[in-house]
Amino acid sequence: MEMVVLENEPEVLMENISNKGNRDTSAAPGLKLYRCVAVSFGLLCIIQVALNISLRLSLERDNLRKLNSDYEAGTKNLTEERDELKGKLNDYISGNEAKIKTLTGERDELKRRLDVLISGNEGKIKTLTGERDELKRRLDVLISGHGAEIKTLTGERGELRRRLDESQSQQNALIRERDELKRTLNDFDQLFQKGWEYFHSSFYYISSTEKTWQESRDDCVSRGANLMIIDSQEEQDFTRRFPKRMWIGLTDRAQEGTWRWVDGTLLQRSYWYSGEPNDEWGEEDCAEINYKDVENSWNDMPCDRQIHWICEKKMAP
Ligand code: BGC
Ligand code: CA
Image (cartoon, rainbow, N blue to C red; front, side):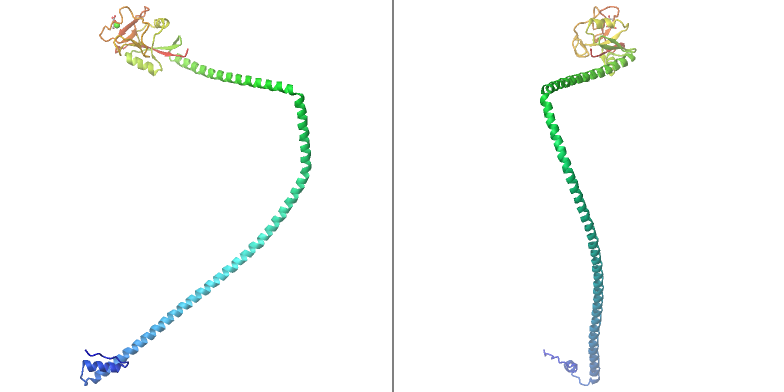
């Protein structure tokens, strides 16, 4: 392939091209037109470049101008701020100078007055120290002269203190006792008002309605008591005051033939009516006061029978 050498002259270039591409030299007017277009295009390119450069320069100039004016404004602001701060600093310094001067004056005045005070008190302190030493000396003389007396008095004071402590604790014990008695009295009062009877350190409640043995026991418990436990001849005699059939707190429900009181203790001294307990109905596991006109008044009964009952609430003797 043959190489085409590009020359600076567009005419030569165009000629070369036209000579290679088209050997027909008869096309001269077309060539001229072609040259004209190429030259115009070249000029346009040059103008375009010139315009671009001038536009770019104009933009750069504007930017520089703007930067310059910003910089000038910033410098102006900074200068103003610096001047303002300078003014403030001066004011502050001059204000504090006056204060320092005042405070220094006050301090000097206080120092002077303190000196005056100290020098005035030195005399007083000396006098007071002397007086104190004299009093101490006289007290020593007094103590040594009345040593025995002071010993006796100290001993008496100790004894009095001991007796005071003793009577104080006695008084405290009395207060406790009084409060306890007040509570007891209040309890008694309440129980009497509710119809309970007092006998040999216990209160007794005789029901006005009839219930089974278990219901009767539950009722006594709800009153802070239990079915009656008879553990003395006097108590047994006491039951004869009430002409009623009444459940007492005695049962052999847990083990047939083994009678126990409701507090779990085994029956010791009994007051069965003759022939009792006979377990007549095959299952008579609860005890009642039945035969009120005799000393031995107990009978065993089916627990589900409904009769009156007697509760007992033991009080501290
Ligand atoms: C008997 C008692 C028995 C009672 C039951 C009486 O006749 O003597 O032993 O417990 O009847 O209701
Ligand atoms: Ca019986």
